[in-house]
Length: 108
Image (cartoon, rainbow, N blue to C red; front, side, top):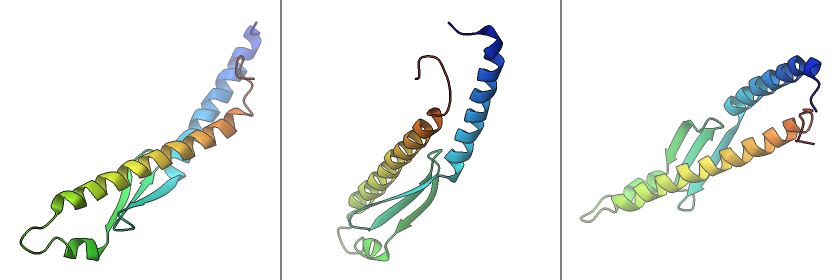
């Protein structure tokens, strides 16, 4: 049973944890590539795309009679999705580490 006198302490710990998670979301930066490095996506823990780099060689391949724009689009999508997965993994790992020090009933 939870001690009612400890509720304010637990709420304070939860607020501190939430603030720390928000800081980590902004500070966490991940990078993912696709097409052997043709496209690189950089994203933060809030899944905001910070930078998208397309290798000039990938753009040169778009010239000619039959440019494969769809392939480049697919590479961009793949790099952004992979960066999102990496952001999720980094955040999950970070949050699990922080929860280890938080004394909440049922999480022991």
